[in-house]
Image (cartoon, rainbow, N blue to C red; front, side, top):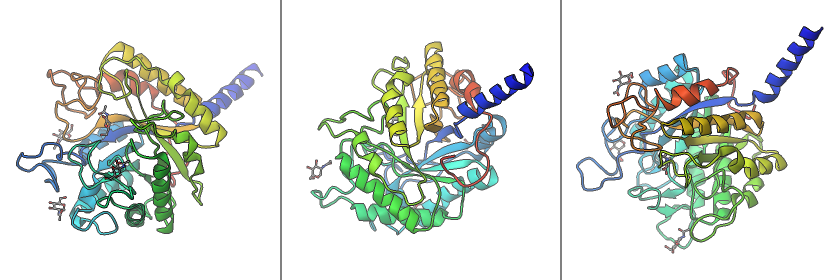
Length: 380
Ligand SMILES: *[C@@H]1O[C@H](CO)[C@@H](O)[C@H](O)[C@H]1NC(C)=O
Ligand SMILES: *[C@@H]1O[C@H](CO)[C@@H](O)[C@H](O)[C@H]1NC(C)=O
Ligand SMILES: *[C@@H]1O[C@H](CO)[C@@H](O)[C@H](O)[C@H]1NC(C)=O
Ligand SMILES: CC(=O)N[C@H]1CO[C@H](CO)[C@@H](O)[C@@H]1O
């Protein structure tokens, strides 16, 4: 009797806490190669495999087969998908699209994992040369060179149409909007949702907020102009299929940027106001970027945050920043010597990179055993 009830209690506890259904890593690289104008080959459109690349299939195998994760966020650049000559909309560069689709299909069809499609554009289009600040804000009606909200909707309609029959994709509307009116983010998000649903694509959508979509800042004014909190607008999004979640990023260093090796910002207390807002509004969220440096303190901070996400059922997934094929010894996160999460690479001192340090110590122990393996991407 005691054993039975203990077993019942345990399975109940597992059911209550095992709510994280997506766990994995950012695959960064498809947005590379625009940051150093003047050098041969840099700029738009760039050369596939040299200036930019999406994934290394062998390391995807490692993540799926050995680490048992089920979620990859795969970045790309809207100026490459929709060249400036034709503008943002439904006309794609078919070469770039097919290179991207090959990566997405490998992850989803060959490996059976979920792929989060990430236009890595800060809700800006037309000049990625100094991201995150360059480029016109989408839908800025005072800027005659800006792409319109309608064009953004057409872009998403076309992209979703092409993936409508792939149950394992997730649509991330845009990476890290910032310094723009929050109601314009709402409008752009809504145009994307409408475009995706009109294309007959029923998969999970992730909608970002302002302030680089920082989870800690969700209920605060953000940016130089003190833009309104994301919390005042993003509960107005309408999805006829009710399959949209909130997309947040949460770094653990002093300014939430992921550029320092020390972790000093505790995830649980910083996320608490967002958690309350999600509960009040019956919404779910995915933490699609976070990270910490190669040190014991950060391992503890990461562990604390991932435990917090597991313990609060408004969170359904996470992806750490970042792996990807062309980081080399560069560090995408959290101090120069941390290195990337790409298996097989070293850090800038020729030592093991974050895949052997941060991932082993702080991520691997937190990968849930109950991740979603089948079915259309959704909130459950
Ligand atoms: C289309 O993309 C490919 C690489 O993905 C590039 O080589 C080509 O120049 C691009 N074309 C245009 C018109 O941007
Ligand atoms: C919109 O465009 C105007 C004119 O270029 C510019 O002054 C303003 O800063 C832009 N707004 C945003 C949010 O970028
Ligand atoms: C892809 O990853 C494998 C396994 O780590 C590695 O051996 C190979 O060199 C990588 N290829 C490229 C092009 O980076
Ligand atoms: C740590 C890190 O590299 N964070 C980056 C995550 O990606 C966004 C978009 O590229 C950057 O703004 C962050 O700096």
